[in-house]
Length: 194
Image (tube, rainbow, N blue to C red; front, side):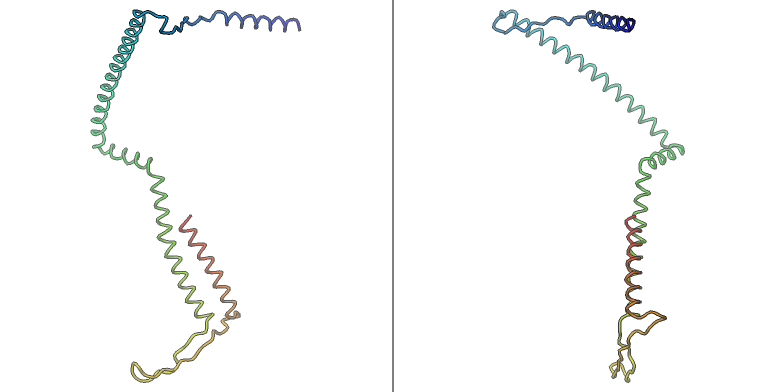
């Protein structure tokens, strides 16, 4: 226990010594302008102006050097890229870069278009077939039974009710058609909006 306390004291004193050895920042004084002479004020303004001009000049020179360096590098790079782009390997590389950038978007767009091109006609075709089937199996209809001579000849019609087809009656067929319409609509939506 004593050893632990002594180690803690040693660490605490080392920390305190480390803090004391840090260099002190330079001292600055803030004095109102009314307490300075005209000469001191002029000297401060000249010093500020010179310091600002030196900094602006230094940064302008650095900016010019950076601009010239970047311009030279880009013109050299542009020339080399143009030469490389005119080769077969360059064409292949540009194709690979374009695929890397736009490949997923192109595949997604193709899937969306294919879904719309297949899904929309599928919906309308299945709807028309179901409507025709519903009309034949569930709704009473007029059937031409007798036709007179000529185009405007006398015609006779008879109302025919749907017969039981197999073991189903017309109301069961109507329910089956409604369910098939819902299924075909779901399939169409899955194709279009996947």
